[in-house]
Length: 476
Image (cartoon, rainbow, N blue to C red; front, top):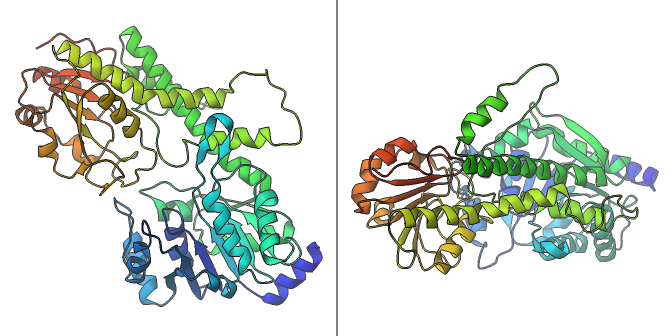
């Protein structure tokens, strides 16, 4: 079959027309970078015309970005490729039949992490759409982070059933996971090495042909489809583990009355041949679409694999324990808040909390799975009144988000920083206290944004993640 596919792809010729399914944080920058390449003639962005996201179609076709927050050069590049006639967004999935290659960048959350059951509903529907209109010789690439085994398993089965074609014979199939971070989408796609894994060598080679033109300093790292799936889930799992390690250390430092940032700097100072520490920073929790669920994709990949795992039965893996540490951090933020209110002589019931930041990452509008949400829920359960400010997040289901910082701070008992937006670094203690109108207002810093002494000297009750040296300060 491999020889048949190789000959079919050779006869088809170079990739010229590409479809990108999913106009989000991954699909949009990928599509416009393809469109900006001289190697390709036309890029079609496929987006469902739904009530929640259909608005993106017209915006993109006007050359506007539906992604808010700071995303360098993205809007300008969208405008450029639209004016050049090289990019068009559509809800007509039948046009998949026109393309030489199609990529899918669709979210893959977990409906039940405890049972390791992913919600592949959106991805399955996207794969079905591709299968319905799939032509011979087309390359299909999954960019979504998926459970290891999905490309050559579930995705292949759906594509073959819907199309009547055979993967590895009539069409090419590969996994090339995205490796982007909001705030640097274009740069990441160009500069990060690209992991590419086909179900066979012709599929891998065709996918390499697709992605090579958009890489600048990045290079291609080829492997099998399953190895590529494990690479993506593992790299996010390792990052989650690193964050959990510093969060755990922050909790220890609080208990021992010391500053975690002193300890972090000390650990990070040991450098030399063969020494790598990669010490990250503690915080109020981990959010986003990737780190909050990719550990479970990796765990599920082992669960459904054919060979048995040699590990103590019934015990959490190191990776799952890390997830639990990071999930605990919003709870710890609530504990700090309750302790600070008590020191200020106030009860949670009726106290107003001004929550600064809803997005999970600074200077972005990305509010997928934010740690601010469980923190807010805990405050509401305790009887607090919560008002949320975020300069970038326009709206969020079930949550009123203000863009007027002074209004959120006015008469608040607590100022809680959940996101390190640039705007919050500029907030002065005297200004915040005047707006809050409290003798001893509370500040709970979940991102090390403020200088503690500035607020303590202004009369605040201060609490900060990992700041055991300041969390029991004398009242001013």
